[in-house]
Length: 59
Image (cartoon, rainbow, N blue to C red; front, top):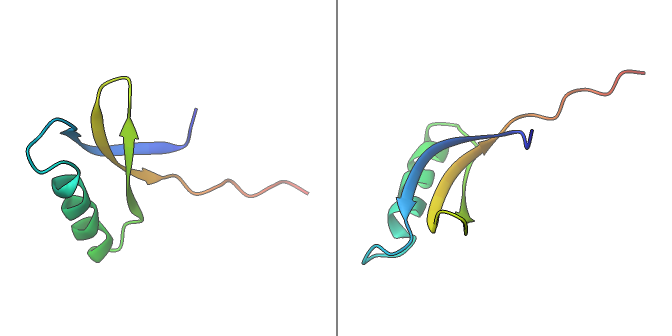
């Protein structure tokens, strides 16, 4: 498991490129989420993702 949750997908071939994904991610960050944009080459889409917190290491 990669520890990420996909919030939204945006087609990479859109006329505005990654802008809609960046705008969506910025709005989520304004709400307090740690959203970021990544490119999914397999589906040719920009994904807005939130990384899951790292589990604490057991001593």
